[in-house]
Every structure is written in C-alpha cells, then in structure tokens.
Length: 160
Image (tube, rainbow, N blue to C red; front, side):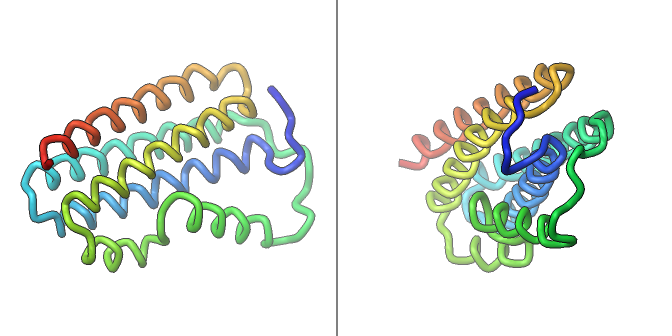
C-alpha cells in the first residue's frame, strides 16, 4: 500500500463513499427532471449503480485497519473531505435538484459524463492507497465506471 502524506486509505474510502452518495442523489434528481425517457431510464440505472458502489466501499472500509495518524485538527478533516467532494465531483445533495432543473437532457448527460470521468481518475489514485486485498474491488468499480462512460456516450450520440 503506497503512503501519501495528504490522505490515508480510510480518508480515501470516505471520499469514495461521499462521492457515490452525491452521485446517487444527482442521478435520482436527474431522472425525475429528465424530459427524455431514455435519459430518465439511464439516470435511474446510474443511481442504482452508485448505491451498489457505496456499499462496496463501506465494506472495504470496514476491512481497513484503523488510521495510523490521529486527526490533527478535530473535525476539520471531515469538513475538508466534504468540501473536496462537493466541489470536485458533484454539488452537495441539497443542490442537486436545483442543478438538474436547469439542465436539458444533453446537459444532464454532459454533467454525468464529466462526473464519471472524474470518478475514474479518483479511483486510479485511490487504488494506490488501499491494501492489496482491496485492489481487485477497486479495479472492478473502475471497470464499471468505464462502462458508465460508454453508456452515457452512447446516450449522448442518440440525442444528437
């Protein structure tokens, strides 16, 4: 397991869980507001995928040893992780509905495509930090995220 100064494996798992939760909320809101039936069905499917990934990450986190370093700034690391997830991947859950109200079907797919690509990049970094026993699970999720990119890309082409 590689060691980076900025985040522990436990913190990366926390970020992954929060990312999947935010993705689930976004895709549910997008499904409710999508005016295109194919986009609606795709968003419903993606919302389910995000929930599945969240469960995998939670189980992965349960199998990690406790963090080696105590939290340097009580409460601040959690706030930092929340800020990172909120600004880097998706809006906060309470902002997701407001965001999708202003997006067309094409806009929803564009946003989803960027989210999935960012998630893949994050997972490649995360893979370097988790124990060897979790690498296969992270690789499986990376493959699933790549399949999401493919489905979103096909849906975008069908709209054009």
